[in-house]
Image 1 (cartoon, rainbow, N blue to C red):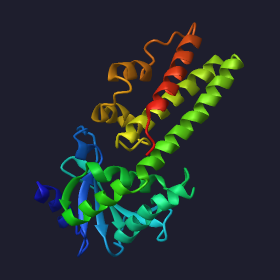
Image 2 (cartoon, rainbow, N blue to C red; image 1 turned 180 degrees about the vertical axis):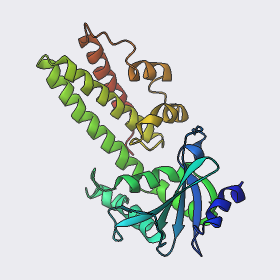
Image 3 (cartoon, rainbow, N blue to C red; image 1 turned 30 degrees about the horizontal axis):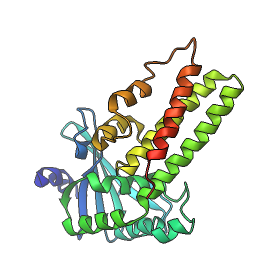
Image 4 (cartoon, rainbow, N blue to C red; image 1 turned 135 degrees about the horizontal axis):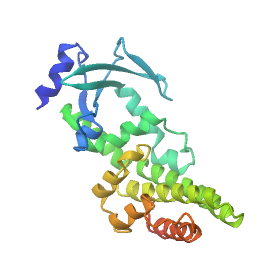
Length: 257
């Protein structure tokens, strides 16, 4: 299996000498992919890999990562190169010292940095068992889970305030949108508290929900609200109030540490 994944990379000279680890991430690694899904591979190296591909900004000392794309086996492949030192820096950002001192904010991690940490626990390892085991231990002992949960709960609070204000003003259409946003944020917080990260990728929320299997709400009820099955456009106020009350109830059950 590893050889099947590595061969297209080796044929294109996309594995730098001395690479520390390589692993498949995203929907393919989790078994959620389909015939149109990309193959995403992360490569961890000790030195920067010079490629002809794209340069993507990150908020680190070396403020970019490099990517390569190619087509093989009827799929698009994207290879993303991270330096081991960049991963160290990301972990430093979400240390308990940083979290407890108030240094961790919504902007602490860039999108790409957060996705990297989110995917470590659900990847298909190609090589680098020691590197991955060490990184998973660091992830589990870091404040990353608390960081994402607290952020989602903060977004929930903002959406709740918006919805309540819009309700009071009689702006039921805006209140409907705010209630939907609030529900998404509280579900993300709940799933993140169970170690199911990746709330930026909303399309996978149902899959993440099934994987986490939280006790605070059943999937059927979650899905009825997510798809607004009980929403009556002629009388939306009841649905809005029910959703906001449910959001507050679920939020009380979310553990932040």
